[in-house]
Each structure stands twice: as C-alpha cells, then as structure tokens.
Image (cartoon, rainbow, N blue to C red; front, side, top):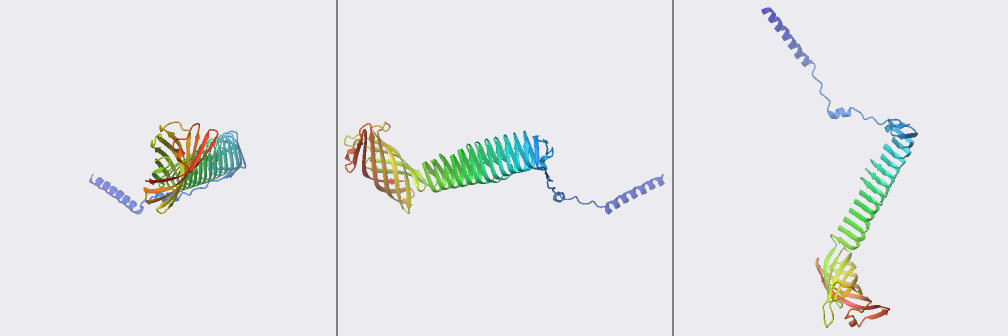
Length: 400
C-alpha cells in the first residue's frame, strides 16, 4: 500500500515538473496592437470594369449586372433607373440615375440624379444630389443639393443647397442656401449665406459677413461692407452705403432732431440710417397765432450725410402733408423741401445745425393754408385748380 502511494506521488510530481518546463520553454507571443492589425490589412482599390453601354430596366436588371458598383459606362440608358460606379458620358433614365462614385458628363432624369462626385451636368424634374463636390451645374424643378465644395451653378424653381465652399451662381424661385459663397445668389424668395463675397439679389436677403451688395425688399447682414439697397436694411455693422426707406445700422445714425422754420415753429424728426445716408420721419406744428388756425405737418425725407471731424453737412429732401385744425384730416396741401444744413457736433449725441431751404407748396381742390401769403419773397403759379408757391427759407435746430 505504501508502495502504491509513493508511485502515484512520483507520477504527479513528474507531471507538474513537465508542465512548468513547458510553460518556461514556450512563452505566449504578444497580440498585435489594433493599429498594427489595421495597417496589416491593405485597402484594396476598386477594380473597375469598363462596359461602354449599359441598358437597364431597374437596378440590377441591366447589362451591368447585380454588381454594378465597380462598372464604368460611357452611355447608361434606363427605362426606370440606372446604376453604375461611374459614368463618363451620358446617363439617362425615366425615374433616376445613381452613380456610386462619379458622374462625368451629363445625367438626365425625370425624377432624380445622384452621384458621389459630379463633373458636368445634372438635370432633373425632381432632385439633383452630389454626395461630395461638384464642378459643373445642376438644374431642377424641385431641389439641387451639393454636400461638398461647389464650383459652378445651381438653377432651380425650388431650392438650392450647397453645404461646402461655393463659387459661382445660385438662382432659385424659392430658396438659396450656402455657408461660404463667392458669386451671386438670386431668388424671388429667400437667399441665405453665412459669408458672401459678391451679391444677393432676392426679395429677402440674409447674410453673415457680406462684402459686396444686397439688393432686395429686405436686406439683413451681421457685418456689411458695400451696398444695401432695399425698403428695409438691417446691419449690425456697416462700411459703405445703406439706401432704403428704413435703414437700421448698429454703427450708423440714430438721432432725434428738433428745429424751427418759417412754416412751422416746432418740428421734430427721427433720423436714422447708415454712415452716409439717412431717413427722416418728421412731424411739425404751428400754434394758432394772430387768428390763424393751428397747422400740422407730417412727412418723410431722405438725405446724405458728410461727416468732417466735429462738423457735418446734410442735404435732405422732404415731403410733408399740411393739415389745418386736426392732426389727422384729409389734406390737399403737399410741401416739398430741399434743405442744406451744416452742423457742429462736439459730442456723439449732441449737435447744433442751421441752413437754408427751398420750399414748394402744392395745393389742389381748395385754398392754401393760412399764413402762406406772408412769404412775399416767393412766387405763386396757377394751373386750373392747382396752386404752386415757391419760396426760400431758413432752418435752425439741435440734434441729440
């Protein structure tokens, strides 16, 4: 019995010794790092197969076969759709054309065109999409989309969208969008660009940093360098010209003027606009004196502003309606004024000014306001029921 135990113990000891020796003599090899493993698997380029002509019914039902992603065609015609890796020439289908990598030439479809890259033209009644860059042009009724850089033109009655740098033209009936535009955006609706070097010509133009021109009914820019021409212009900062019925510019003119003249003893105006051009909204009142009724005036004006150090010169053209008695009443009197004033502005929000005016009062279907007969230095003209009186005048006031 003792002998059997000792034999078993010896066998077990031998097995342990063999196992330890095996571990010492055959250490495990380290696993390759993930980056090394990735580098060890080379990326195989696409093996292109050239087939001059592809005739297709739908997707894989074509002479390109089911594995059409590596096929290059010169001519691809589809009853419904076509699919190829690349088309160097013409792709045409009733519903749509799909090129995985590139369309170099022209793609025509009733529905939609897609290509990874576009070098040429895409034309569709529906949608054109470039998954990457495009050098060429897109034309559609619904939408054109370029996901990368665009050099060329997008023409649509619907929407044009460029997601990368854009060099060229976007023209739409509806909407143009580009983050970085060098060229022209034009639309009967809305044009938007985060940065623009060129022009926006639309009903509504919205730009971030604009260097060039915005022409539309409403123009909005964060920083404007150039021309804004519209009914309403808005700019956070502007260097250039802001021409409009209403221009609101962060670093422009925002003043209240009060002055006296021979026509109305008390006049007040809101003056706002860009650095060189402004709008005036005016009201005036002549108190009842010497038996004359109270006279009210309300009008609008536009002017040019020339700053010279602490001084400035304004040339303004104003048109006002005159009312006797009530402020809101039908009027048959229109006063046109051209005034040239010089001002001294020691502080940003304080100035004194004075100058000369040329006045023209037109009256129809009635008599001229009382008191106008005292302007002996002027002249009066009659034509049927229209009375025209002209005279020179003076103006003096303050601006805050």
